Length: 482
Ligand code: SF4
Image (cartoon, rainbow, N blue to C red; front, side, top):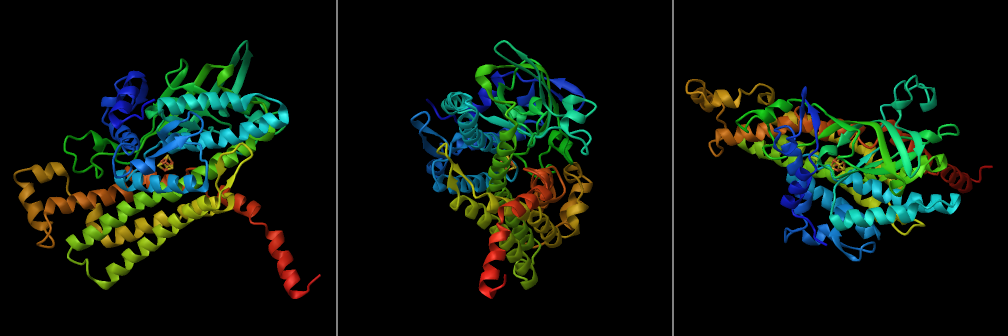
């Protein structure tokens, strides 16, 4: 078995020959496409980390499943240390890329499916767990990227799946055939889908009696017949297509979101891990969501590190790096960011072993982590905007900077501290702009709000997990109240 390098990964994705609708055109040249390439570079970093002497130890781990060393991005956690190391690895990837590096959804889906199939088999005498182990062993051995596909379009939010006018608004089993099933529907907000080798389809919520059709969990290759991809737009994304890399803000990396349509897609039986067991659909959703809420305590913190670094740098380029009110704002940003990290570490360190043998995060603390993530990055973005100054929203373009008439004026009037170069100052401002209001804000802000579920989903879980009754009982005990 080989642990892929970033270049191996890029070659393997290219060989899949995926096609997508991108900005009104159907293209099969995705790896060369200016909108797609930065997102592939970000995923490639998750492979290179396993070869870099500085990070190899963090990224490489022994697998019980294939009895070999694998990339941690395909690992089934065997201890709380593994959970902690996952968060550390995500923080590293976050600061290196300053964007979403996309590979965590498959990792989180795998750990959730591993434990859920085990318990489902025990109750229903099904055979999903061994099937999933065989499948995931192959994923580990081939060092693949897997998209965890959960979010259905949901149509009329006031209606259940079976009451929708169009039953495909929740991805469903359309037909049971000899040797497998045919699925129809769509998954929205698919992070990194076009950079993945495989798709792990999961139900979007807890299903009820009569909704067995929508309780489906299965795997298909991304280049399966009947799967169609429609690329998502991001703020200022066409800056990625400009010849000068200056205005894009993040010159190397970027995120990717895709709408994915499944039209009469056949899934063979050996790739089905749930088919109608409604009592385990909610458990699977809850576990996947909690792992991904833990993930945010690493990846968003890493991106926050990049924003803090850029903010401190621009303050110093502006000549106010030593001002006490600036220092205080940067300390506030650090405090908020490290609070998120503390949550990511805490829900990992207090995780527990599941009956299947892998480790699950502490559900309460993972949800506290994500609820904080729905707020703190917005405050970090506000403070960065404050420190950076109004130029963040008014800077002339790179094309004007290159113009022989306008360029010298821009260089003259955008000069600040004599220690700093004008073009470097523009680069730093563009990175901050990217994260607080540009393409990077999709990953850093909107995804922080809605990825792995919106704030209300975390509040519901916190309410369920907090054991309020015990707290009341202890107060009664303390006070002698009946
Ligand atoms: Fe990974 Fe974060 Fe992107 Fe989710 S949002 S895939 S945890 S980098």
